[in-house]
Amino acid sequence: MSDLYGDGTDNASHTAQEIIAAAVEENLFTHRSPELVALLSQLDWGEKIPDELYQVIIDIVAWILEVDTQQSGKLPSPMGD
Image (cartoon, one colour):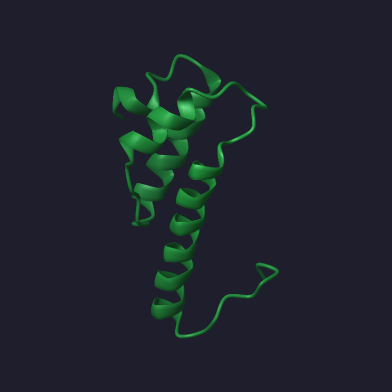
């Protein structure tokens, strides 16, 4: 994995590497966003995420739902069922 996602020496980067590896193994779409990672890595644990970053995350989740809906042919459940 890229140094951008950590070198695996701490629990967070090790967990991130395992999640990415599992997604790749299952042929799931993965997307690297160095800019977003850099911005989020500047925050302290428990610190409020700036409003500008919330919009980015909302856009990503909306895109994921759109792709999922197109592939499955059905609308996602609001409860995640």
